[in-house]
Length: 231
Image (cartoon, rainbow, N blue to C red; front, side):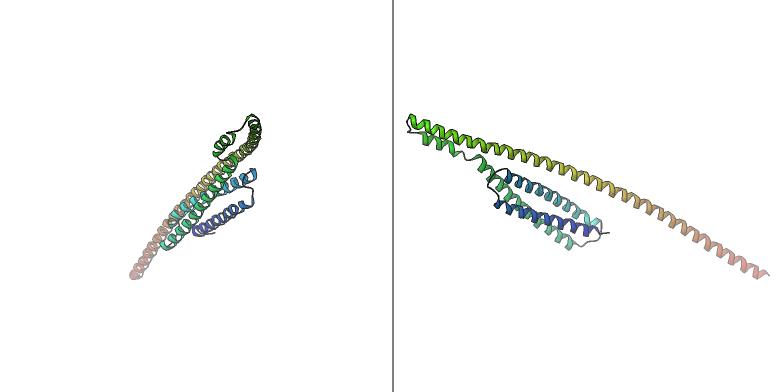
């Protein structure tokens, strides 16, 4: 069975691999369209994995804090692992910043800029009636295109809501797993305590038997010596 220190390293290696996977997914976004449902789904998948990684880092920090109480480990090794966690956390923060920038760029491409209103007023000034009619039609076409983009935004928002729901489900499952691990650990500790109590009881009982046996032998020797003396 692996020691707590080895289990911690296994968990850290899994977290590190997940970090590399997220980094590759962020780099792979450049091959996708600047906006749209596919891009939003890709960002949502990255966000879910980043949430899992953050949870793993918190768990690793807690396990590392409790590690000295479970097995002997040097302070130098503890500091080395703290530094490993710090570097991985820094990497996660950098990826989160890149993800937020990508999400902001995606929203900007979907919703457009506030300067469009000023542009419409500027283009409409100085037009005659016929020019205003043509400009109005063009504006309506642009509004239709904007509504199509808004529909895409609504669809993307739906995917975000689904992703948030999946993240909440994941957190609930992780908490349930943690409760289960705590219960299993508690049961094991109770079983170990019972075994130790039973062993202690048997040890005490065995010592008493040996003492009585030694006393009996001594008495027997004394009796034999007395008999020999008087016979």
